[in-house]
Amino acid sequence: MSPLDTIHVTKTARKKRDRYLTPEELKVVLRNRSGYVCRKVSPSHEDLYDKTKFIMRGSFFELDLDIVFTVESNRTVVVTQMSQHTDSLRGHFYEQVGTTAADAVSAVPN
Image 1 (spheres, rainbow, N blue to C red):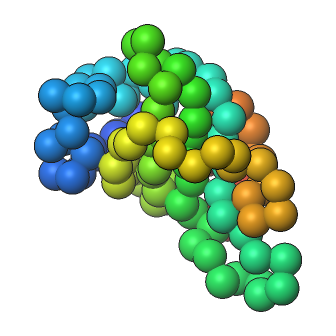
Image 2: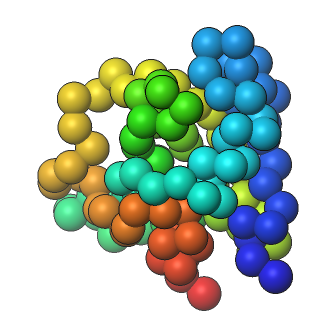
């Protein structure tokens, strides 16, 4: 069983459904769409950031969004969704793990 089989959408992410995506659309994105998937890193501090927390950036259902989610052993949790207000998620403090939420699942340490 994959953590993507069970996707929990938090109250925070659900509240934003009028501006962004519905819980069902969020599930479709995480299971079937691609974008730029990364996590925060600190080159100077090992384990400073949670290695199970990711950002998926892309255009989904005609909206440019960042979807913040965590991968747990038995589920994926959508923490929030927001407009792309940061210029770039590439560079020194972000590590690209792939293009899909499945890539994020594979990047979580055992």
